[in-house]
Image 1 (cartoon, rainbow, N blue to C red):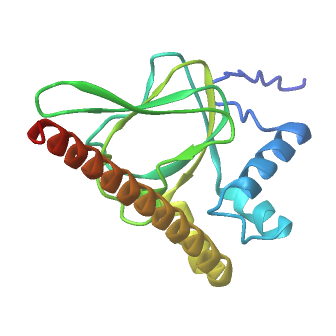
Image 2 (tube, one colour):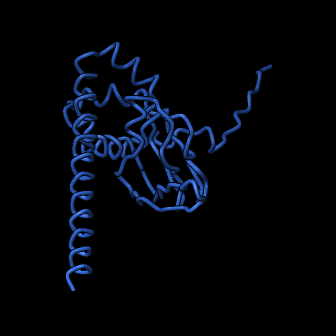
Length: 184
């Protein structure tokens, strides 16, 4: 008498990247992200072993402002809105990300609280690298880890420069407005 085992399949637990075409797309997405562009194809194949996959429905929070920063997210499919709530309760949209974009990279460095919320705008498939998994990866592959940390540093530097430029431009605009108002 054979023992019959029934497997219950749930899309919640399914690895949505089981198919070679989807793995190729994720690998291409990772290669295009500055954090990982110093890695070889072989390095990326090793890195893909620590990637987790999550599905989100429209309106579902991926994380809330103030949550601990625990990972980096890469959008495999869908759109994500990043928004911040001010102390007065005003909700300020900061960015909309689409397929191939990434967010949450600072969590890989500092693990601090999230400065904004991330919400699925549409059905989303996200690839996630959690900080503890990356830490283990870096310990096991220090040279590859250094390349990833250099990539994170470059992204942070570019964003900081852009923020400084925006701040400078805003100050100049205010100064011009002040001079115009006081000049008459």
